[in-house]
Image (cartoon, rainbow, N blue to C red; front, top):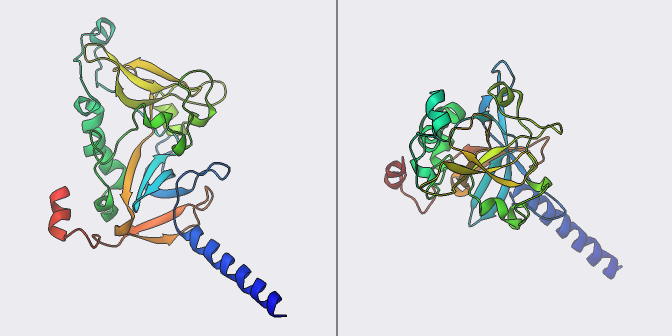
Length: 261
């Protein structure tokens, strides 16, 4: 009887620890896949109807969570240019880093407003070096197995497949016969060149001119979880985590927080 009682107690403790673990976000785990977060709103339907945005959690480390939009949500050029002659002759300006691009500036101003409005959760976003608070992954990150991606650059690479939303398609994003779309990465090929890294529709790493209009956006934010409260969801794709802003972390004063804005 005593042995049976101890076994029951151990099973109960394991069940409790599993329940706690489900409430704690985690990054990608091989064999288990991703957990998901619902964060912000953005046009989703072809007519621009807005819906909550679904993000997958790539990594959780030191109470910081790196998120990636599950879908390609829009189409934007890296260098905003509409003059066809300038595009054809490639006389648009050159950049030495993603931070010099028009897309960087857009995402960290209007893009932030479009996605998150005045939601105070923006105060929990962590600045990404060279990317800002709303950014796109670089080549190295898209080759990181710990994020669920393969190290392979070329060939069909399912781990980097991404579906576009109806809105993204309406904005000009290319879609292949399997329903997948290309999207930007934040690596410049050459300071004297005119191309930026992108993830092709079949998941391979490729290059595209800064002014391409059919390449999509798959965006990222990094959250300081110490400033957030889990208010709903179980982390599944069907019922993603929902977080609300609860205030500056114990290690960050309100003054420091204001300085970050």
